[in-house]
Image 1: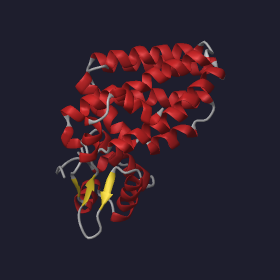
Image 2: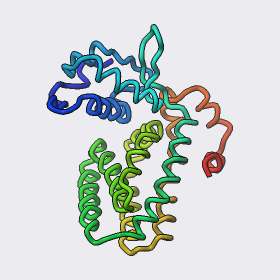
Image 3: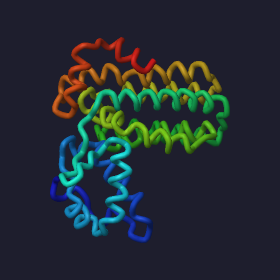
Length: 250
């Protein structure tokens, strides 16, 4: 594992540590600061974060349940490779929840939510201009979280976030590879406009188009970063066309 991935000042030691350690590790895995196959050294992490092993082990167990970490008894704990089936499972969950939430957000939109959308889009444009990939990805996530909050069911985001870890690694990896910041912002602007116009049908249709871009992304990434994927993912890609990927979750 990299020697200095984390620092003690990244934690608020006045607050419970497990949730904070979980978020730090998940973010590092999604952003590929901790890459597929990389060993997780509990001793090193505890030293870097100045914590005991208990909150770290609890966080690692949560990430293992989300298939982001592989715990090998009596052997090393490693960051899991990206498995296509798990990515598609995350996509299925994401489509199911986000298609519903965006429809409800359009139905129940209130002017008090307008500032959140406007601010999010403004910050996205700024991050895009600076090519600040980590910042842009975080703002992308925040935009979709705002939709869940606007729908009246903010806990949907927590459920969604726990199910899409493998998918998120693909999404995060895609930003610098495809350089599609402007495309994402344009789609977000259309989604926000449909929500603020209480147009449920348009909101659903635009969201589906927005989410569907992952299939083209998969084809590109499995070619360009095959080392991050499991062997069965590569085999599936080689015998499937783009439309077949869509059929798997549609």
